[in-house]
Image (cartoon, rainbow, N blue to C red; front, side, top):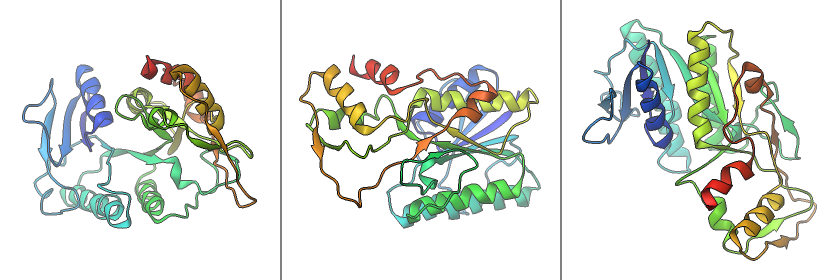
Length: 280
């Protein structure tokens, strides 16, 4: 069994911690405001990773580190605080202690800058245009360069209980681009936890792993198709068509075959399987 640090214990990190603890791993969660009492066999270390002072006493003898952070806001300063300052502080802490844990870093498919409906995989060009995604990309590259055993997992749009943005949109008669299709990519948060636990199991079993995996379901469906299906099942008015000019942009389509070839089976392989539970 492994000694594991989970940095960022939101809904995904907390569930992952519980699942790994049940399997016998020794799990510590690093969180700015941890709960008063830990659940199961999990312990907490209270700190803000953007402060080198606050993590100076962080234990450093972990074998595996999960990095699952959520910036405070969608702005340059918030992303820089965790993906640049925070990550550097953590790497410096382990370096000073002379330890080298293996990292599983949660990234985002927003690092892809493609906008014409292209299929993207782990070998596609990664050139994000917005500054927030650039900080994520710099962080994942730093970890991949630091150690060939470190793993980057690029999640697409996460949904599930408490992440019901599309359901709220469907209830408001949205105006949606139909042609050209605007592709969407998503993953249920239960599969986020499943993928992260699965990769650890593969590592402990001695399987050869790649440095990067896209974690997105099997169906990068057009937003129009998603909204039509949601409104029908929610008994809401259908969306109206959004007129777009020649400058209308399309999303990319995420290919998850590398992860599936490794053996992962999605709990929710498409949006219908996941959203029907939320609707009910």
